[in-house]
Length: 400
Image 1 (cartoon, helix red, strand yellow):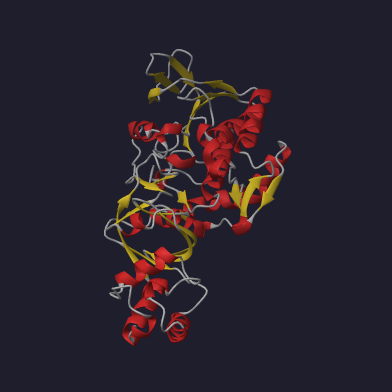
Image 2: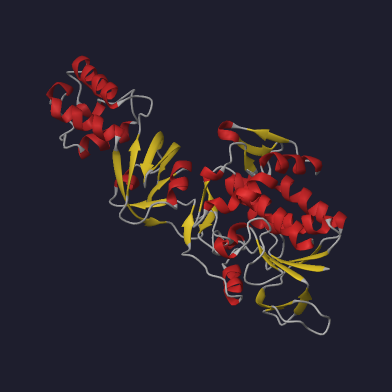
């Protein structure tokens, strides 16, 4: 049996190796000059392969429960064991993030490419599929693929692993969605995810380059980690995780002293005002907060001019300052572009696929896996785990 896989990213490579392990003839059709380009960029070039805490709560979409069969069948432990069998020594870091011990994403891609070559998986690069149809041809094959250059190939089974729209410079251009649409599948709204957020006003721009440990709250979710101010808004891991949940007009609230309660911050500020009574408030936060951050908060709380002394701060002003430290609000105007996004929110409606096999319920012999499906995860290795799991299942079930 001949299996064609459109896309040579993480899920496509895993699907190919799984199908080949069942004895099928497998060919990956990749639009770029080389497979796995996006994989090389994951984890800032280190490849955050998975996360030891990955569970259904880390995933989103129309029906996050779609991942449950994958979670039970091929999840974190199985993924680490599989890569261990290929020669990857894994290490686990803070937050359950798993990386290759080499700290290089190329190690992960190298072992996948090597295994593909050794087992006989065929790879055809520079093959940009423009159409895929389920029509028997003279050889009796179920599917026919045609490239923009006019090449035509046939296969018994078809797995679409073409990725989403995020990071188009690394090969993803959303073509997989159009191919699935041509088979009658529904595609949900597509939005950039794990991406920086644009904010209203020039506060973030004035603080460009400053990093803070913060707890962010938005859209009913709380994310903690490093908050980075940029010339367009805010960035950092907690921002990435919130990016697909917020929409323009929403507010992100930042607690920049998460170790302390609001009451503790108030007490601290009252004490500080007492023993720094003769200090200009432009120096009020020296030794406590970043100087520019502190001065910005003071101005936003109406404490100007900053030449005033700490003794001149009223109890109401101190309470407003404490409120801002614990709930510093940023109004969201949008996200950065697809070029900046790590993942796509949205995709092929999972109601139209069997979660146990990744096979289409509309077209027999058609499978999909990875980012092209309406499943996306938090920042921290969760999306690659979904790619490995869904790809593995799609490959095995297409072969069987």
